[in-house]
Image (cartoon, rainbow, N blue to C red):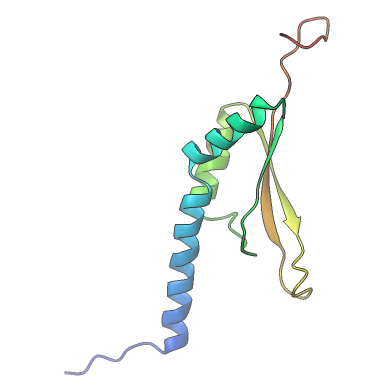
Length: 113
């Protein structure tokens, strides 16, 4: 009995979706993000932008959702910043994840040391 395979476009679409999920797993790995945040903190920074190096909308991937939930539980502020694709102005935007945190302050408003 011969099994009918889906058209190649369907197979390619599935493969691309799976590749994006794997990419998001790497990009939004909490350990890697917290390590990078540590580097930012060591220079006095209070903001990290997680920038996919490919123009993909990864906001709804399980890895991105888990990371945002974790960051917000830990007291960080997160925001998805839309980025237009300069190579294809008609394409849907992709997004960078912006993570921010505040300087620790004393009751009088001065920065804690």
